[in-house]
Amino acid sequence: MDISSVTLPNVVVHLDFKGSPLKLEYLESLFPLMKSHGVNGLLLEYEDMFPYEGNLTNISAKNCYKKHEVKKFITNAYNFGFEIIPLIQTFGHLEYVLKLAQFKHLREDQTYPDSICPNKAESFTLIEHMIRQVIEFHTSVVPLKYIHIGCDEVYHINECQQCLKRHLSTIDLFVHHVKTISNIVSSFSKETTVLIWDDMLRQITLKEWYNIDFQSLNDIEIVYWDYEPQVKVSHINLMKYHKKFSNIWIASAFKGADGRTAIIPNEKKRFSNHFSWFNLILDYKFGGESNVYNFKGIILTGWSRYSHMDPPCELLPPSIPSLIINLIFIKKIQEGISYDSANHNMDVIYKNYLSTDIKQSLLCNRVPLFGQNNIEWSSCLFNGVELYSSLKKYISVSTAISNELNNNFFFIEYYSKLKTINMNTVSDNIVWCNDSFYQLLDVENKVSNILEEYYKKEFIVEYVTYLTFDLKKKLHYLMIILNDYKKPRIWERGPIAYNNNNI
Ligand SMILES: [Zn+2]
Image (tube, rainbow, N blue to C red; front, side, top):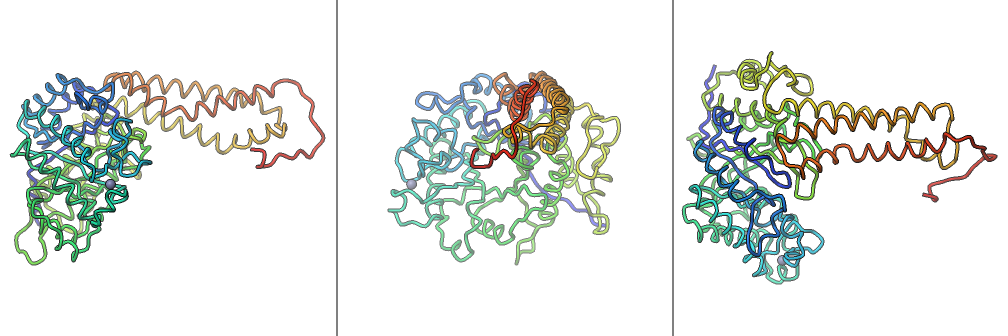
């Protein structure tokens, strides 16, 4: 038996507010739970929920947080012992800014509102103003040890005429932009360390890597993210980062990584993601070095949408079990777990080391079982379990309706064009459509009522409408067709031609 442990000084939870502001009093109610499970930092991705001012006012959604609310929130979080790390995207994922007519001309490609052109002076004025407002706001409330400037998934780079004219490689352009943003940060707050996501640097070969001028990036710390159940982290990339950056962080996902339309996270996959990460970083040694490398921290990301323009994915309250399982796991590893290769698998670790703590932390009547596909939480009493159960109900109702529509109703529209439908099925089908419609309404109302504890009206309306819009529309349309058939009618002689050309 070995005792394996890891020194991971920062355990940070990512709160993603984009287009879905959680009530801050709810988030504050989670502080004791997070603190007792080892969290010591919060990464706040405000996106359109930060109350920008002056010529940046339009960047904020109309339902953004008020300054005094955020001030109270971050003060309380800091007093609880959490490092506050704001995240501002500064290259890609700027949809919430570049979608606006006011900033449209700064897009790298006019069709896509996500990436900013790094060769327009006005781009830097915009980013500088955004950073200034966020930094000044934060430093007036709490110390700002770190700021995250995003820089992941820059889908459009080195494409516009102005960029191409500079004849720079994409990576040189990227590094130059990051340097400039980092300098902007230091001009406002010298003591603040800049974090960036790593993915734009992954494709660079080792040979190219050594030719890049990283001199002024030395103070930047890089966050290697991988949210897959089995992480595919490249040791070569880790080595590259190790040579150029003073510290490496890792990022996992406790929610928002199981598909852009997921309702509840797949806790097994989320645990597998963390398990896989820790298998990789336990006793990590870089080639040629004898000392174990200590990663600076882990950010447990919890994405709310895949991008500003995507629908909401898993909400935080029903994802609390996923967060807690992984926090308990991280804490156990920090304290040291004894294992040998024979029992060193996910199921055994869950059963032997985590399940009792999970039962206690999530107020469960019995140990939640590690099922074949996922874990069942309905016997638990954590804040969020009602929403969890209602969303499970929604999933089961909508799946049943959807399957029935696909299997037994898919032909109705076509045959209604041919005017041939078995009249003896019409009434029963109308009853089924009507019942299904009301089942959806019922679950929609339940989810909507429970959501009031966590969100304001605007988001609740979006979320429940998103859940039921498509099925309700289909059912409504079917009922119109079927009701039309209830009348006595006569039919034409066959055959009746109606083919795809008539669509
Ligand atoms: Zn450009």
